[in-house]
Image (cartoon, rainbow, N blue to C red; front, side):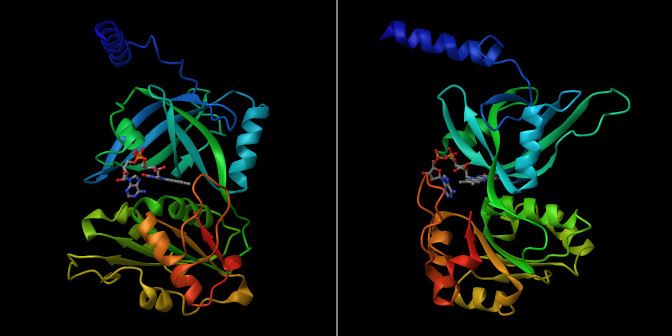
Length: 302
Ligand SMILES: Cc1cc2nc3c(=O)[nH]c(=O)nc-3n(C[C@H](O)[C@H](O)[C@H](O)COP(=O)(O)OP(=O)(O)OC[C@H]3O[C@@H](n4cnc5c(N)ncnc54)[C@H](O)[C@@H]3O)c2cc1C
């Protein structure tokens, strides 16, 4: 036992203080295999949530790998799998912002970009604690992009988004995609539930987008407790039947409007039913949205 314990401690020491066990950083996305990425910055957002920026590198000229990455990213919302190389487990995260490094930097001649992951730290969480323990300059293995929701501009008149906690991540990615595309006139309504105002993730950023694109982006927050008095778009409550009925009262099936839902299991269960674990299937539509007369065709569960 002592020999095993000593060996484990030695490997842990090697990992922490040397680069011997770490794969060489390539920072090149690959949907087919895990590749190491360098962490270039960490920005704390709420008490337990931070934004982790990883460097993306691109070879001087596109090859098949880059073409495949671009193709997947162009098809809609996407995520990455992040691996803990020590215990070989992975979890999925949705980049809230990214720059794929398609353009050549005039000063360096290199092509580089970044991918931003917003990660909430769970006290007993395996991967979220691993990511939060990573230091700037260190590396982490990722695989992707993985297409999570196919999207084509113009395919929906309005997108209704119901999010809870880190469920804001895919919504933000889609909001940015639509707002930054001058050819895309899709309208968006976001209903974002959070325990308190302090735990609303990336609120200043969401509010900036709302201020700049108020004609196309409506945002309302629901908080369980601790309502501040001076917010025009925050209300006390949870995404229950009356809140969702009011939120979707202008839903127009003939304009191909759609409802996207992403949040903790408890919220998914109540709003639309959870997705089958480890399956690409959506599972049957249940909960409040079903009771309100929605069908699977106009609801997508992340
Ligand atoms: C498509 C997809 C995209 C995702 N995008 C993001 C993202 O952008 N940012 C992000 O932070 N997470 C995201 N997640 C969730 C993420 O993949 C992990 O499940 C999460 O980080 C917890 O992993 P863990 O290993 O730390 O916790 P685990 O070791 O798996 O769980 C340990 C404990 O943590 C708690 N816990 C874990 N997950 C949750 C949860 N979702 N809600 C409440 N309690 C929980 C539970 O108490 C659990 O018992 C996404 C998931 C999917 C499927």
